[in-house]
Length: 582
Image (cartoon, rainbow, N blue to C red; front, side, top):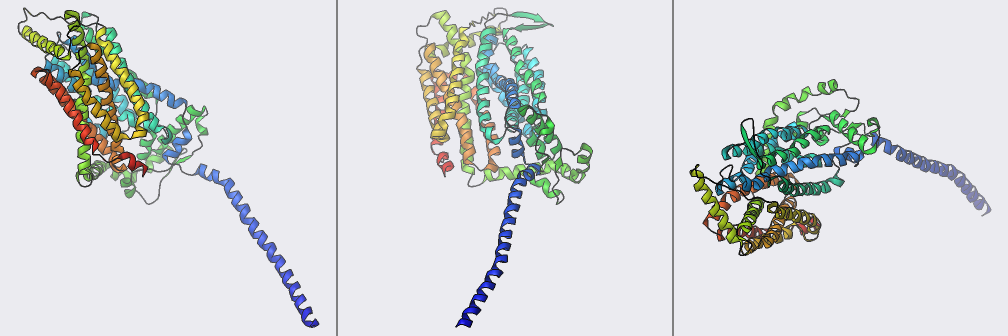
């Protein structure tokens, strides 16, 4: 037993001595990985810092600050210019009635002609924006818009004015659509939704500014001759409203091209310079301190398939000649690019022409057609209605100045002027325009601004579909209310509510479109929705004077019918709020 115990003790001692080194090795093995892990964690930021960055990462590092504030300030005149292009005609119609010998149909055509120009150039501008860039087209669009603007200012008859306004709409369609893309692509995803809201407020500022300018200019009786051409106060008004377009084209020249577009074209060296400029202004540091040194290649998949298997990365140190040397392999891609774009466009459109999106997309198009039919018709005819109300009350007093009486007076006056114009010797046309003619327009514009601002908060609680249904229903009710309006005060209140709810409905239908369709189809759906909505704006402004000549009831039945039809269709849309929550 003793021998056995002694042997067991010796074995235990050997086992203990053998385990000790093993334990030491284990500790060493455990300590070394932990040291390596800590060293890797310390080195990790440097690796991320030096790694190629995508657009969102580079935009986030560039930050938000002085650059973005200056950009938004300089973009405000550009946004106002787009509003002015579609709205100026509605303010000059009462003043230019005698000078241009306008009939009711002429007035409707002048309100609609800009939208006709925008529709005819929509596809062209969309293609150019995706291939030539944002900044160049914005500057070209705003500055070249001055040419038809000067033509409109010098117009001596209604045909000349229509031609130049059509050309102006053809040109302005590009900046109108590109400005939103340009601003959102110069901000990180954290601020992008707020920028969209700010753009809406900029447009509302434009709607307030126009009646203020009209208030100070159009009541003046300016008649003078220059270079053999006759000029009046309404032409001075048109000249002043060209200033935002001039400022927009000049000021945007000081900002870089969209880095998102540059990266999508493989022009990463130029995109890097853009990010450096943004970073330097926002952080008040030298451009060389921009922490990102490389950008990822974000060429579209169609071009990546044609490239070599390796992914090219452009760095700050990359020189322009080197970048050009790397591009010959893509030359055949550039030659095929129009075919690629056409194929991609068809591939994007085809799902909308088949189930399950065919019925849904058709309903969205019809709703926007109806909403803009009613909303833009009333919005663009309101200045004429208020001018007629003010003129009637000055001549006949405010007693019995119902909307039907005002419309009857306006139609009869136009018919009398038309007969007078036929006999130039006895033609006697007088325009009664006072400052009070535009105060109600300012009230309507301010109400729209406040309503748009509040809707941005309410829509998050009740959802776009419910907001759309409520807005279209309320706008339709206001169409009925205008028929029973008996004073300028009640007319201005009802008109303000109608235009505000119509604007909210138009905003809601675009928001619903974003929620109803997948990401790959959203851009196409929104583009088609806006195009068909503009068709509705044209038809509404042409049909409204025709219905006015038929009597008092038809124009208001038309407005109510189209808005309520949109409300009924919106009630059967899928609940986008539940879809988002799921």
